[in-house]
Length: 112
Length: 109
Image (cartoon, rainbow over all chains, first blue to last red):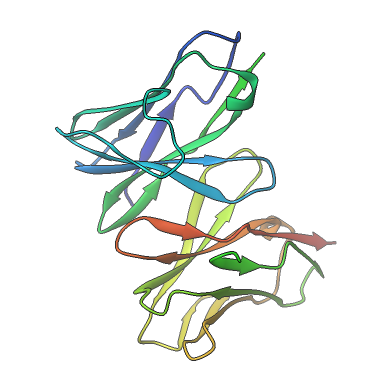
């Protein structure tokens, strides 16, 4: 099956710094990738749809200036959490679309 | 109310069957999915069913869909300790998925 990787798996950063999370489709090209956020004991909430070569589409309530998404190639989308704060601590999961969505293993972000 | 609802917890004995239930609201959903999430990990697609079907079986997994009641269930036969995880149902509206909050399945040896 299709493989999607994320890097890093976990990251701890200080408040006010920016963190970049990468999502890669390893064995297929994906023009569309999705970024989800999961709070503890909560469901996954779609943050944005990332389209290769164009601007991401953000869900209502998600700040596009805070969560910067770049989908510069058919195998890579990045999510940058700018000026991170403790409330941004969460589990971020990406997926890549090829007929169905294939999910990455997730990135746990902890902001101190 | 929530778009996709699931009970939060289920506990079963090893070897018994587990049944995880889900209700959804969007009658235009084309596919309905079951995902498994182990601690600290991403999502693993277990199975899915197209909305014009009412049942799908895949080894130990049986999915039942009642489209009239918008009710979806996942039955795991001969539940094993390795089945302990959180199970999410999700409906597909166009492409993005809408997830339930997940059902935490605990298997007692």
